[in-house]
Amino acid sequence: MDSASLAETFAKRATQLREYIFSQPANNFENNPWAVANAIDEFAETQGRMMIFKKAKLDVAQAQLTAQQPAPHTILEFGTFVGKSAIAWGAILRDIHGQNVPKDVNVYTFELDPQMVSLSRDLIKLAGLQDVVHVLEGPASDSLKKLHADGKVTSVDMAFFDHWEEFYLPDLQLVEDLKLFRLGSLAIADNTDFPGAPDYLKYVKAGGRGVAGSVKYESQSFATESVPGKPSIVEVSTVVAVE
Image 1 (cartoon, rainbow, N blue to C red):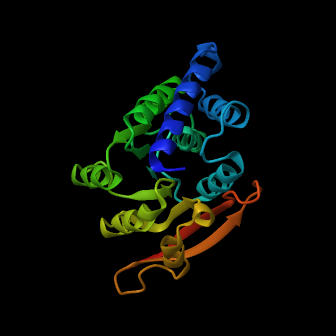
Image 2 (image 1 turned 60 degrees about the vertical axis):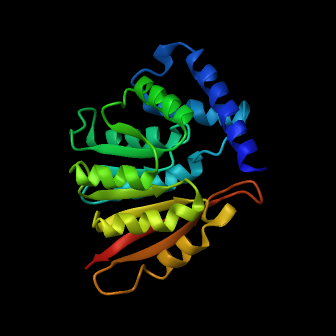
């Protein structure tokens, strides 16, 4: 499928998802991010196939975040799509910190497509996470540089990569170059097996740049159940040194 056809399919699915969720009683979802995330999963399974971060993979990431010390405050997400994983990150942070989430707890998620930006913002608001999860429209690298220049992001506990695979490595290296990672920070990437992100995978498996003053990683591939020929690996890379 070419890029134009893929974009058309994504747009159709997004419209259908909006109708699916907002045709239901609002009190099914209001201030209940897990209900919204689960409804997106249900739609993807029963109504229209979508490229979202499925529950089995999310469980891997949630376990990593829940065990992280100190507790995570700032998450970057490269690739919002319909907002399922962004909502899940917000829900996980709320579960970790409690209902009164500190003001310095934030998820920043980056998306190019205006339709996806609009839909994800509406779903985030429905879930009651609009003060925690922020959707930034435009190229991820530009958005992140501005967040850093404005002093809004000075440290990152997790960076999640689920956009175009060829940008995984340059965007990871941008996070490094801005000196946002700390000891124990996580870089989590989807789709490293299919369609594949070989440059990114080689880099994190090798431990990073391997030069003085760089970030060093220990990386592990977590396999989840999936349809044969479809992505099943979540790559979790932990920062073990920041020099």
